[in-house]
Every structure is written in C-alpha cells, then in structure tokens.
Length: 93
Length: 289
Length: 255
Image 1 (cartoon, chains in turn cyan, purple, orange):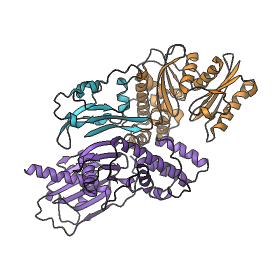
Image 2: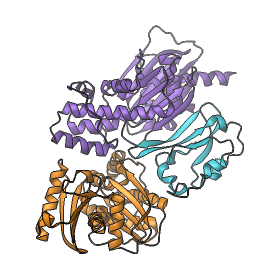
Image 3: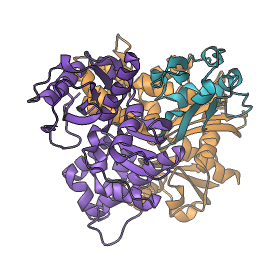
C-alpha cells in the first residue's frame, strides 16, 4: 500500500509517501530514530501488517516540520530517507 | 464549536424485514463516527440487514451509541446479539462498545467494494471536513490513499463558507451552478479565504451569483481532481460522502476526468460503516478459527 | 532625480516618492475591485503631498502581487527584489528580511549589499500570512488593532490544532465557548502563525540581524511571538509597511 501523509493547500502539495509493502519484514525501523522530529512510528495496520506511519499530530503541518531538513540551498539527503533501509519513504516536494 | 449543518440530509434508519436474524451465525456491526454525521450498519451473515444515519453531536461515544441504537430500533436485536463490532471514522477510538477500531480509509475501500461491486478501483470520499482519495484492489484492500483534512478547500466546509457568502442554501448550489450562459473559468484561489475575497470582487464587478457559484464548483472540482491524480484514477470510479450529492461539483469532476462515476443503490454515506461491519465479519471468522 | 515606487499589495496600495534619496511623500489606498483606480488614488495622494506633478517624475517602478496592473509604472521589480532593496536602505545591517503582507509571507537572505541570495515564500494559503490573524480577530470579535496588544496580556500558552484559517476559526469559536480567556486565544493565534513563519525563515537561514517589514509588523502580538520563535530580537524600521514601495523607488533610482 502507498500511504500518502500530508496535504495539498493553496501553496503546494506536501506529502510523505510510505510504501508499506517495503516496510514488511523491516526489523530495523530506522525511520523512528532517523527523523529529527520523531514524526514516524511503527504500528500494526488494519490488515495486521507491521508498517511505518506518520504520527497523527504531524500530518497537518509536515511542510513546516520538515522545513529544517529542506533548506532552500545546499540540501543534504533527507535523514528519514537515509535511515530507511528498505527505501519505503518518498517526499513529494 | 457552533453546531452548524454543513450538509442537509435526512436522519433516518432502515432494516430489512425479510431477514430473520435469530439463530444466524455471524451478526456484525460497523459504526462510523464522522465529524458531521455518524452511521451504523448491521450485517447478518454478510447481508445488509439494518442501518441508521444521524448527526454527530459534541460527544463521540454518545453519537456512536445513538447511531447504533437507531439501527437496532424495531429489529428486536440488542447490542449483545451482535458478535463483532467495529468502530471507524474520526471518532473511532471513542466507540465504547467496539471490539476493534479500523481507519476510515480501509473501511471506505471495503464498503465501496461491497456497494459498487469489486470492479471499483478508485473511491473519492468528500466529507464535511475532509476529502479522501483511495485506490483499492478487487478485494477492497487499499493500495494507495491520501486524506486531506488540513485545508478546507475541497471539503464540505469550504462549500459552506461559500454558500454563506452568497446567501444561497447549500443544497441549491449544484443546480444553480448550471444556470449559466457559459461555463466560467474557475476562481483562481484554491484557498477558501482568498476565494471568498475573489468572489466578493467578482460580485461587485457585476457577475451574477450563479456564475460565481459555477466558478467555485469548477475550482473545487479541479482541486479534487489534483488530489485524485496523486493516487492515480483508474476505472471503475465512485464518489461517496456529502459532496457526492452536489451535482455541481460531481459533474465537473467527471468532465475533467473524462470518467463517469458509478451509481450506487444504497446510501453512499453509509460506505464507511458498511466497510467496518465487513471488517467485523472477517475478524469474527478469524477469531473463530 | 525624482522617482516613485508603487507597491501593489493584495489589500493595500502604497506609493512612495523619492528625491535624491530623500522621501518626499507617501500615499496609501485600499486595494479595491479596480486596482488601477486604487493605485491612482494612492499615487495622486503622494503627488499632492510632494507638491509635484507626474511629469516631474523621472521613473516609476511598481512591485507587489498586482505590479503588472499599475498603469503609471514604467517598470516593475519583484516583491523579493523590492523588499531586499528597501530593507537594505532602512536596516543595512540585516541579512535576513521577513516580509509579511496580507496574503503572502516571505523570508529573504541578502548578501549585505541588498542583493538577494536566497528566499522562501508562502503564498496562496491564508495560514501563513496576515489574513490568518485578520480572520481570527473577526472570529474573536476583537478589532484587529487591539488583537495584537490583547495577546500580550496572555498568561497561558495553549496550542492550536487547526492549520487552515477556515478550520482555525471554528477552533477559536469553540475555545471561546469553552470560556478560554480571549487573550490566551489571541496568543495561541499569534504563536501559530509565528511558528509557520519561523520555519520558513529557517529554510533560508537565521542570521544574527533580522529585519521585519510589511503591514503585519504593526501587530505587537505577532512581533512578540516571532521574537520568541526566532529566539532573537528583530529590527522593525519606521514605516515598515512602506519598505516595498521604498525599494521600488530605489530600484528606479539605481537604473
């Protein structure tokens, strides 16, 4: 499943997509510690799979919470993506 | 919050008098507590037996109880007769009698699969305070989804702000939006606050109300299509939720996508609760194994 | 040399006339439905105050979201360019410039000579601009002018969950119904918008000297929340809302 967390508003589209098929069998859970804001958690989803998700309280403001990792210039690799060994995380912006 | 009606619909209940539930093997229920309305659905051996749709009050547990009590009305069934109960929706964790909570996304997909048939791949749910776009497989399992509840544009709430500005009853918006000589360009702002400013300017400029309404329905449709594009629109396509009843938005979405949305026999507002009851059936079977 | 800068904002139009680097006069009008007409009002006001005629102006440069619809202008400059140039004149030490108008907010990083190095913008969403505070003051039924001062009286910091101005309005109303003191709601509103602005500023980098320009700089509640968020003081120049128009008039002089 591709789970898109975030939103679109007048200023743009801000989604973090987690491909939960890649989460299966991941025991590393790098996303939990990789994100400096602690936005990720691992849960048992509606289909009883163990997957990562963005915590509820961050979903309406990821544009702002991710801002520190997205400077306008000299953007380093995103820590969440770097920490996710199965490569399940993508950002839309 | 001020109690306001965003979308007018009848509060009502229904049950199938031809079904005798006594001695049935699997009785399951789903309760969908949304921000504006709450529904309860009861399935008997996987068949739709009863449902109710009501307004959500300020208290989620009470709203869940009200919807459930109403679905049970005149059936002779009590809560204890139901083998498995699933809560869903915004208030899903506050359904006191639920055996499990399932997200509204998963429930809408499963409910849509039941209601529209297993050929449905894309479900758009346009609620009072959010908008969900779901792609699912032939079993009704979610394969791709997004939910927008951050921004009011594209929700029933955005439409209500607009209806208030124009002093038009919200249920008339759809019809009025087609009473224009020529389809106007969408209002440029996707932000409800800015669209309001823009609409006021258009009215001052002498645009008839209906033309402004058409422009807004157009903008809203375009915005929703943009949301859908992220998950990829595949036939068959279905629209559920309150705005699903607004033809001014629905027809414009269909036009922009070049796809006609499926028609359902049942009340599409119950899709989430129906999906929850179906999850209940699967979970019940699993627990009995 | 006499030049004029016209700042065609979403809500207000501001005109500034400059003679050999000295401000001769300012004019201001509310941006109405016919923005060209509103621009004419502000423009004529400035000319009258300066005691000159249009013919005496060597150059007229427009800026702001509606800069293309200023009939008087002979040239245009972007919002970012005008803000950076204007801020360099009035707060030369500032390397980070925060410009918050009614419908847009921007953070600009300059090289110290008024040249733009980098910028980040929030547009087309009321959550990150002056409109947000305006909508909330309406929901609270407090005059916008008093709204900022009110939040300074707050004793308790409460969070706001809604991001969207439309949803935040309902949240404010429900907070009121729950008998939350108005000053605490006012502070929550200013903290919320300041948080969003601060995250935008972080994207361009927070330099030690920061200037705040634009009409929202008149709101003490916002300024207080911004300073707390930035953990720094900010420089607010005199006539901060005219800095864009000043920048445009200076650009006209430069060329």
